[in-house]
Length: 222
Image (tube, rainbow, N blue to C red; front, side, top):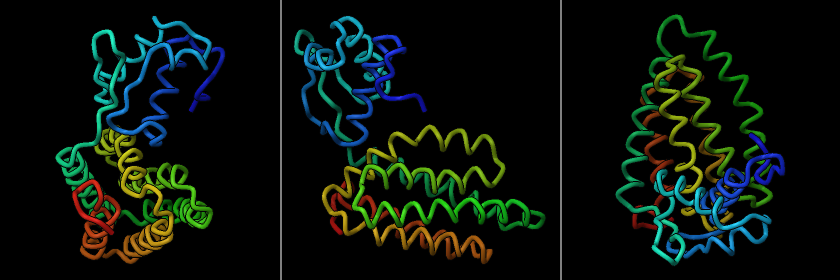
């Protein structure tokens, strides 16, 4: 991924990356009002490229432009969270069922090798209380499972959910960094269930894992 503030990038692209990263990491919360001038000043760019960035982020559903006022950050609605989780459960469960089918030994072996480093990194981030880093690693872990299945269409669609996943994870966990250790342990259990060719156990674990991770957005609590 290119640096967030790459000086070689066009001004509108730099503004887009900076604002999007602030939204996804929770540096600016849903409902916050953003000014073109305030966004452009630290980047050393004018209002016009910032406005272009705002238009792009509005098309992605992250901002809503307000005439002569700037833009407001669109919160993650409970309905959107449920929709995303429903799609994720379907895609990940289907991926694991393909992975445990006959002839998929090599794919499972590749997945097992890949998740060793991912799980170790998640546990390191959890111990450090790094919510933003963990959210990124969480997205990569789940995407790796879908990619390992060999279904390119599913992997491509799942990748399109990555930004929503990161934002939802950070918004749900918030300051409760103690939950990261629990989530990392659940990832390790799910990886073991794939290795054991137990798709039913994986699906049950995934359902509980996603519900707990995003309980806050769904109107509940840990």
